[in-house]
Amino acid sequence: MLNSGADNSGILQAVLDCVPEPVLIIGEGLRIVFANRAAVSLCGIDLIGQLFVAALRHPAALDCVTQAMAGHERVVSRITLSENGADAVYRLTAERMENRDQADKAPLIVTLRDDSHLDGAEQMQRNFVANVSHELRSPLAALASCTETLRNMPEKDTKARTAFLDIMTQETGRMERLVSDLLSLSRVEAKARVKPTDKVNIPNILKSSALALKSVAEGMNSDILISCEDEDLYAIGDHDHLNQVFINLIENALKYGREGGCVTLNCCRQRQSGENSTIAIVEVIDEGPGIDTSHLPWLTERFYRVDEHRSRRVGGTGLGLAIVKHILQRHQGELSIASQVGKGSVFTVSLPEFPSDTAHV
Image (cartoon, rainbow, N blue to C red):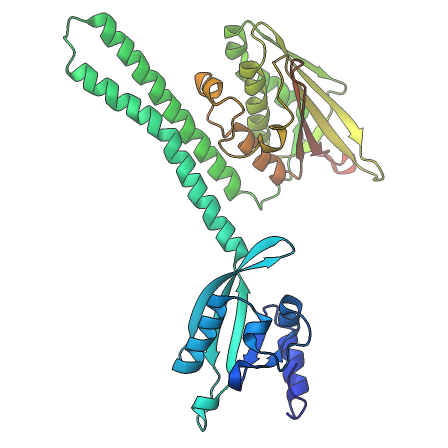
């Protein structure tokens, strides 16, 4: 804390204790003469009088403070500190305080800003770009190879030409699906803070989603069965976005389920325990091979695939469940996944029900 000899020390202490970022003032000999509440919380108690290096044991931090003390210029450095077993990234700034009479003896003010969230966001961006690049590399390479082969192929070899054109069509479609899902994800994230307020009928959305996938189901000799306890089950939501949620889930159930099997959609109303409110529940049940429990926590992550080869073979982009997750977060809903190897999977969506006393058309 600040030395009690200063008349305004109490006011300064009170003001800087309100600053959420750690603030230290370093005097002669690189000893701490002031620390606000946030600095004490970060570095520990009894900081006053300690050497800076003892309070913050980090070579880059000491180097930053030493440079600022010697050169009278603001020096900035990024340091990583361990807190409760996790690493936190800080932006450390050191600069001499104004003292025209004794510039060489002016104390140094050190602030630390937690940039961990920025560092995490940058890492996510790097991973995202790397994943997209990886997803595009294969179809682009295939297209380039086919184009070069067709360029040098005899015109009379129509059978081979058709085969290569089919490959090009397949790979182009793969890139189109990826771009489409990326745009969908971007649009959903852009509306993340805009909470929906419309009244939407859940059974009607399920019927609409099932109808949109009728041709896919017929192509796999599969059926889509809808079972709703109440046709008047309404939720608070965005109709188009919820339609996208159930199309993604049903399509996954068809493509990764058993060919010639059945995808079952169950919807009902459920009262929340301990609360005077109800939620709409929709289960999407497939008859597929099931998913090992080790994969379940990661299924909604972007580009995560249980079986990468099979996913690409059926036209998956690895973004479908990520889109579902973001849409449900916007709706204050949840997605839970239960699966057992050899016995299929159940994807359960829960959404706040539209209040009956304020219902409108």
